[in-house]
Structure formats: C-alpha cells, structure tokens
Length: 218
Length: 218
DNA sequence: TTGTAAAGTGAGTAATCACTCATTTTAGGT
DNA sequence: ACCTAAAATGAGTGATTACTCACTTTACAA
Image (tube, rainbow over all chains, first blue to last red; front, side, top):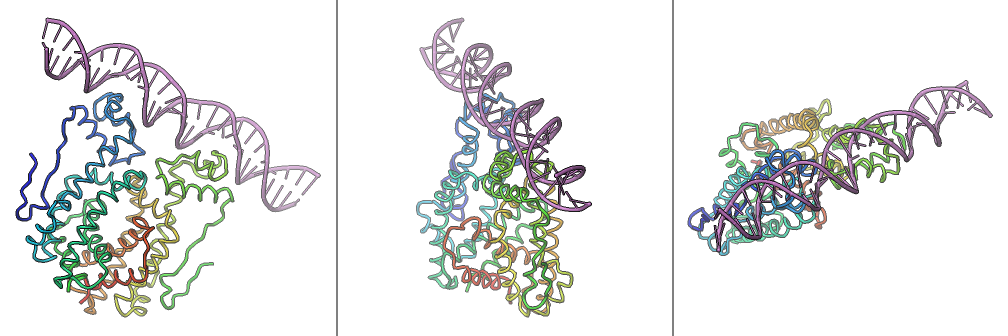
C-alpha cells in the first residue's frame, strides 16, 4: 500500500502507514474524538460525549487509551511524522537538486503538496495547533521531530540556491522564517481563519509564490 | 489621561481608557484570571484556582462576573478595541497621507508600534487567539470590530500607494493578506512561537520590511 | 463445538466543576 | 459614632468529570 516511487515531483507525495490493526470500535472512537476535540477543544471535550458520539461504552475508550490525554497524543503524534514526511527522505538533497532548477519551482511544489495534506487532515491539524501550547510533550515532540527537521532541510535549500545566486544575501534563518511564514500563513488563512471565503486557490498560490520570490529572489 | 496629539508618528501611539473604577479585589481577580487563562487555557482553568491565586473568595468572582465566560469576555473584549485603536482615528486618511510619503515608512511605523503593543499585552493576546475559535461571540466581535476595520484602512493605504506607483498591480485583497501575514507572522513568531530565542529586533523588523517591499514594491 | 483471551460494557466512585446565598465585613457620608 | 449599601465571604449545591472494575460478549484457533 505504501508508495515509494521517487521520480518527478513525487518526493512530496509519499504516503505513510495507514491506520494499522484497529478494532472497528477503536476507529469510531478516534473519529469521534477528532471531531469533538477539533470543535470544542481538548479540555472542553468529555470522554462521555466522545463515547456517545462513537457509539461505544465509555469504558471502551479506557480499554484502548489509558487516559484522555493518551487519546489526544494518539491522535496528534502520527500527524507530526506525516507533516514532515516529504522533508525526511534519505537522499533528499540529491533528489532535490536534480529535480528542481529554481527556488520558485520547488516552493510551488512544496506549497501545493502541503496544501493537499492540510486539506486532507484539517481537523487533526487544528487540534495540534490548539493543544501544543498546553502540553509540553506535544511541544517537545513538535520542536524535535517537525520544526528542527524542516528547518534543516530549508537550510539546505536556501544555501544551495543562494550559492546559485537565486536568493539574496540575508541571514539564512531570516530567509527561512520569511518564506515559511508566507507559506504557512497562506494555509492557515485559507483553511482555518477564512475557510468559507471563495478562494481562487491556484491564483492565490501563484501570487504567494510571486510575493515570496520578490522578497528573497535576486 | 487620554492623549490626543496627532502630530508626527504619534498616530500609532494613542492610548486608551485605562482600567476604570475597579475594586482592589476585582483587579486581583482580573490579574489572576489573565495569568491562569493564558497559561492553562480557558476551559482548563477553574474559578476556584483563580480565586485562590487572586487571594479572594470564590463567591467574590461571581459577584462581579455573572459567569466564568463573562469573566473571559471582560478580559478579551477591551483588547480588541485597543488592537485597532491606531486604525480608527477619525481623519485617518488625511493624517496618514500627510505624514508618510512611502509605504515602507508607514509599514515600519505600524510594525514597531504594534510590536510594543503586543509586548505589553502578551498574555491577553494569547488568550484572545486561543479562545476565538471556540466562542462565537468572540469570533463575531473580532471580525466586526477588528478584522473588517483594519482591512478597510489597509485598503485605503494600498490603493493610495498603488495610485502613486509604489505598489505593484495585484488584487488589493491579496496584497493586504500578504502584507498582514508577514507582519503578524513576525509578531507571532517573535512573542508566541519562539519568544526565548535571542532576537535582534531592529534588524529582524528591517529585514521583514525589506522582504515585504520586495514582494509588493515596484 | 468448545476454550480462552481479548474486546466491550455500564453502573459506580471520588473529585472537581461552576455557581448560589445567607451572612459578615467594609467603606464612606452624615 | 452611627447608618447603610455595596463588597466580600465560604460553606453548600447538584451536575459533571475522568477513570475503575466486575462482568458479559465476541472472535477464532484447536
């Protein structure tokens, strides 16, 4: 089931382990928990409501998850690995340099790909963003397995294209922050802040890329 | 106490109504509630803990605030007006055009000013950002009294400088989104995501402005 | 068909929740 | 010094919370 082709733009299209061997009821619990956590927030959600919406007894939840927090982590943790999946390919650098001749191309591919990912996993991403500030384990996991890894890869990208003269001379950390900010802001605005506005996605992504290139391109 | 001078860059330095006639205990309640809400989130905070930290009886909280949610709104609401204060000056347009000859100047002034504001009101701003998604009244208030008003002013700014040829030809809404995203992202990263990193604020603001201008300037 | 371990149940538990209210304390004008 | 209204109190309320556990049901290999 796991795709592993690494040709073309597919670096950013690898999928990962789908839900393994889960009981039917366990899947129902996860689905209900995801919906309720996303809608009301973790702290304001009760296990009784989750059980009710999942159509299981409350005790069933605690047979699979020691605590309510355990349930939260079981939901949020997997999304973190999947969030960085495209960046942690083993020969990332090589594949990268041979497939993308310009920063623009690369950034566009990343943005399109992560947009699809965000679209597909919106509720869980909302939970992640909402709960990270209040759960040190989540924050730590995010910093260690998401932020730092993405940063390293972006560092590779920026320095590589900087040496090619495609990117202006500015501290790498600032360039990374500015690029990431623009791209993440687009996704957050698009799917979280104003999801019900009518978006011309292709055009707006194009403008975002144009804007970024104007800011960091030579 | 309220400053009303409108000369120089002071448009973005107006202060507003300070805490009016509040009991000493009421101030203690607000202070404790702000700290605890910011730290643990609204739903995970108990009125008993707030009362304890404030050094008052739990009943005292409910003498001043009908419900716990009422307390939340009493904390978050005022910050919204203060957030947009610089933008709702009555003769904003006139003062604006006479005081700032370039977009760059203006954006820099806004960013510096709102940075100071964010620094001074960080915990309340955190609460606002955290709780808006879960409280329709707050969301509505934010959209009506913050987002739409700021948007209108930015529209004025963008079209004005566009007619002067300082800003590229791109849909106004996209330009506003991109500018606002870059500036807000800086503040969020600076104060919420990575507050403990060592920032060279002046330099980073300058880079942000330079980046924005590269993206939207001619 | 039968044995058994895992899955599922739901009534029960102690703790905590937001909120009430009868009573006491405080502040300030006369 | 006295009066009074507002401020403050804290024990008490029923509802809800996350979680437990003795028990029943299910799935499936032998």
